[in-house]
Image (tube, rainbow, N blue to C red; front, side, top):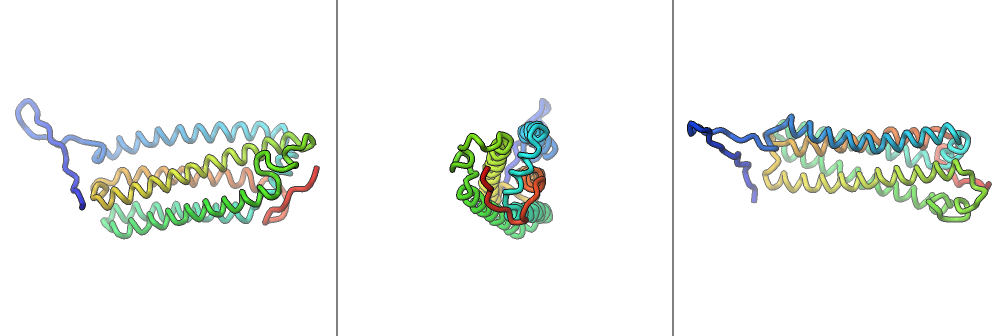
Length: 233
């Protein structure tokens, strides 16, 4: 059963009624607070990119060699999927603002489906890398003392950052499902949509991080466009 948003009323000393501005109405305050949270996300991934850049300067050849073994086709496909999901999420917010609640919900569902496809492709890619012997410490390749230190650093950072990004994707799916529940309950409406706005902002950060992850890990090395099994050392 839908519940309408009921504003809180406060009385001043003269007995006059005033509507209390809660988080549903404080659009700019809610947006600023979430931007501050997003800034901590940028700092976290930014620190990882700085570490990656530092080690790249020390082990350039190893990084280029390791990058050439990643599957660029799957990585590029996931990049397109996330870009399209950012579009559907943004369209959903625009539809909510325009009063098209049904259209907004359809766009959110489309974003969720695209996010699940992204995770599925990443699962296929990690499975391929597991069988190729470059998944964390699996196989003789990474366990071998002759395996270059720079490539170990590269793959370690690759699985750490893509794995952490995947966790953010899962969190985003959970947030969107919660958003749909709030919309169905009438707690997120055309007039009170700050929650929708902030979740859309979160998804923008998620896809933006991947836009940097993809070229740094997948595009710096030479090799076949679809990637390939690593060679022995």
